[in-house]
Length: 313
Length: 313
Image (tube, rainbow over all chains, first blue to last red):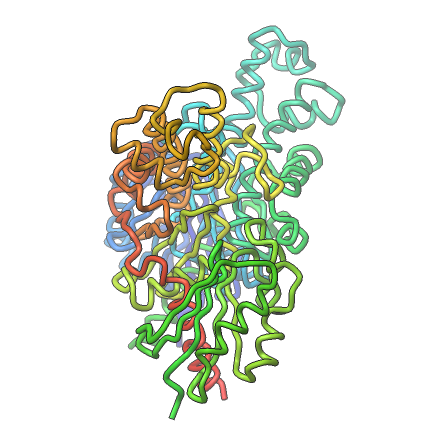
């Protein structure tokens, strides 16, 4: 009988998330811890507490460019700790089960397709909207094994330097990091805002959530900055609509909390910029699995690979 | 025995091309005529001279957004003559053979995959560089049935109005139309150039080829304009590399004639803007089939559909 549990690991941002997931995509147990330097040790420590003889394998969803042949992380601008470390081999050695690796946003897209809001679509694109911006593409109900680095599409040819080396990337205009950086610059330059009064004026402590809450209270600066980020996100969404003509755009990540301003503005901008025949057909909707999409998707990739192995044997 | 010939039609730009193509992708006979108003009549007239009882079907590669369910052209900014006409039905009625429709650049990508330079790749993206800019995506040796409107990716968020309704599209900066329009503006504003002396100063007669030839002769304006268009093309190529991480970018269309300036500049810019790990793996190469890619691909789509039908029967 095939094993009915897998471990999904999400190494996508500031937290490492690990979950024990059933063949039906149900989470039995989960944990999270802030990512520190030694990602391999941390992953092993958390996964260890979940491992039992029933484990089909471990799936890793990791921020960055993945080389699927060598199972290596080629580069990870938002999570340099995973660059150049032999994550897959170390974990394989430790647990002696099959280990698979995928980009974190790709894994989240797989999760949404498997048991999330993507179940009803054959073709959709998932955006992860957090510190950075990532993407995953589902086509014909399958995860496209491509980079899908949607955050690093140039939308302002003469724009600001991005930490990936390019300039004018979507991520430099529409991510939580960009939003915070723009708000701080505005406050430093003396703009008036309720945000000034928070944290005794130490605006380096502000979060995207603070900005959204303050915007809802009517703060002009907060509103303007969120709308500007949303508008830029809309350009990125329109670009994807014009190229991939998906049935849905699924939005995940912390910034989707700012739906009524940031996402609404993005939808308006996307409607202006994409072919109306394509825009009229696309649904722009929030992820169902939220923060769990990554661990569920990573575990799901384990099960899918085990099925494919059995078929090819 | 299955029929070994199909007719491929390319309704992609200023010329209508029709070819009789074998199951191996060989062209037996071909014709082209300038597109005028009545595209249906023109297509029927040209196809008629090729039809015999051995025809497996007719494949149409048409510029614009294709609705694959209804077989209709939803919109075609570069070829309005095909909008709202019942191309497929009219041709089906006339010839009583299966008729298939696909976007022209998608058909060209299919052609290159089938018997062109794309044969050796599993994943590549084709750009058609002419009056407009189109695209076709091959993934896992299959044509992705998506819009692939690569020319309408926004690369200058605050850029010039595009005839598609958006602003700042790749096509508005890197197509032959954009190149000519920029050259004419510069000449009108009094810039010095050898181009001024051509056609007795009637610069509205200039073609992209004239500009390239003049650039090779050392003309500063022509060189500058070609490089600028190439730089913008490079941004579009980098965007596609970062999202689709293809093995190859295949470049087709008239503007590839300006390889040594326009395309070389595009390659330089793409190398600056895409993830180096992805850029180092991608080959940027010219199409093999040239102007025939569309007719060959359209005919190939007929054969592929006939095989799929037989399998499903």
